[in-house]
Length: 285
Figure (cartoon, rainbow, N blue to C red):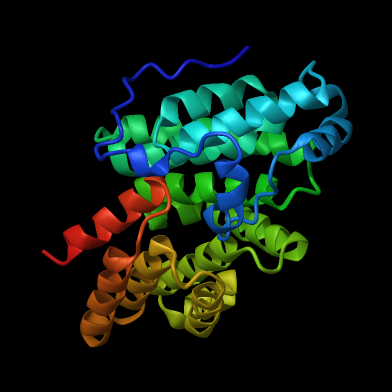
């Protein structure tokens, strides 16, 4: 039975009109909308493959109905109706986890103010992603969404506490698996860069390398790859700025500001990107 999220869902705060993708517009825009996460377009063929792969964990739907449901869930996500996207994805079980986790995760990141509620939502996202890893282990985004949810959860706890709980190892394993399955997954490269930078920043270069295999050079390598793969993505530039500050705040202050400025100037393709760009603009004020 689906677990309820009790808190109200704050609405997307900007005009969502540019981010509506009715009918065939969604398929046409899909390659750019999903350049970062390499999510396959959920047409009937894709839906049939998901149903077969998920087996007993699959929803009791025909491929056409599943394709339609997934497309509608993603339309809701892209226009900033995160609650609808989450509910629709959650109702589909592991097959809908990719959109559900992304919806609740992005909403919690930007539009939930209460810290405890943020943690509860990231926990729920992690539960959904873990089920997807079990049911759909060959899907890169099963693993990436788990890393995303656990990573956001750990940031809410503090990196030190998350390290003690062993979350870092789970995040690393999930990201490594995602990149084995999808080497051009820009968001996974970005997340792995953040992983390295946060640990180095928290416990120092030597201990980070010896204990967790975390290195500043790896952070720089992975964010460079992400920037090459998705140069027009606000979140890539946002995290580039964050990584620069984590690795050497004093020396990299100007470079981080330049990265945030690039993010703020990106033209958003959907509600998530609009929130990413707005966050970057706030850092410059």
